Length: 290
Image 1: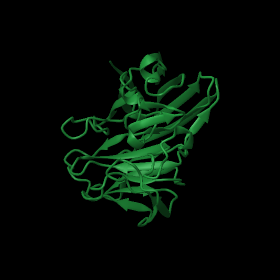
Image 2 (image 1 turned 60 degrees about the vertical axis):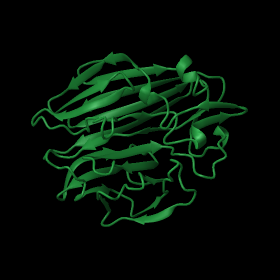
Image 3 (image 1 turned 120 degrees about the horizontal axis):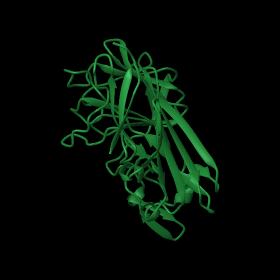
Image 4 (image 1 turned 90 degrees about the vertical axis):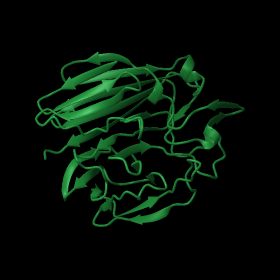
């Protein structure tokens, strides 16, 4: 089921399945800013990645002597959330662990996603709480896909601008979906990555330990929108070659690398919570008037 929220500048639509953002439109112009999930190209729009970002080795979560089949990007994007609160500027959804989640992630938890409209921004807050006696480790991230302006069918000529990094370290993705264990220097050109239709032929650009707190999608030297990362340390940038969208993805965590042991206890960059502890993270999408 879809739910909508609107202020004087923006209207958003969110689906209970995955608590996934479905639409961001300008009230004034009616322009859509979010990719609309064409299943012949890529059916996603803005999935929530939890409790992993990317892929695990052999697609298995190995905890002690047990194994759990956890698919790429985790369980939240295909889980049905419950709407728990809404008013004229905010809407909140919650997922609580259940038999389906425990079959792939053996910890008790609650995961809340709250959308708030703030003038020309959509603020998205994730709250994760452990309800398990065992230490719970997890990753979490966003995967919004931004639609190109009407009439633009190629990402050639667009760019991603960083507000801080002068040089990044990229970790290439192998065909297995796992990361290379060694990073490569990735210098920016005037603080930007120029986008081309061939840039993502080898899958997403993955960066660890970024220092930028804001990334802009730029076209004709003008910002179309800005993603405020909220301090997330890791980043993915991706577009399906030939498609009219680009993803700017703030993450806490990333895929296993090719040398990974596969044991959950050994996986780097995971967050951790003891019972009843709460992790809160907020990022936002700012729509720039054209």
